[in-house]
Length: 145
Image (cartoon, rainbow, N blue to C red):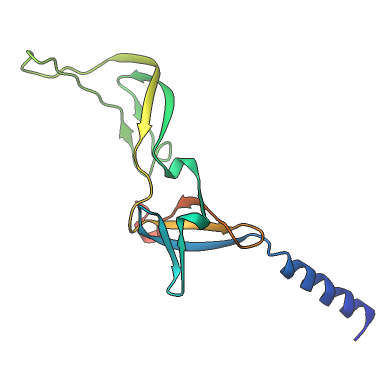
């Protein structure tokens, strides 16, 4: 074995021993307590999981500005043309009326769409292999829209 081959082998062994982050796909098999199946022989329980906040129930403060009519071209917010719409109906009114202009400042929204059974998730094995970070959900290409 040449000196160059020895250096390459030693470097690769050191790299593999450090357990760099790996991207892994899994599926939620139980939401509470959280369990993720990576494959039939590896099921991760909540003590080994770190979950990105957007995949949990959480609050955000937002401001809303609405303008009618407003069109969004294909590609701006999806795969087809979208038109903004709104309606409001007071209890005593028989008909609903559209908003033409609306602004709301500093509204608190609670996002309820946490991980649920059947969700497919992207995991990153943290260096050392003891913890797994769930970064997002994913969909197969034919199920995107």
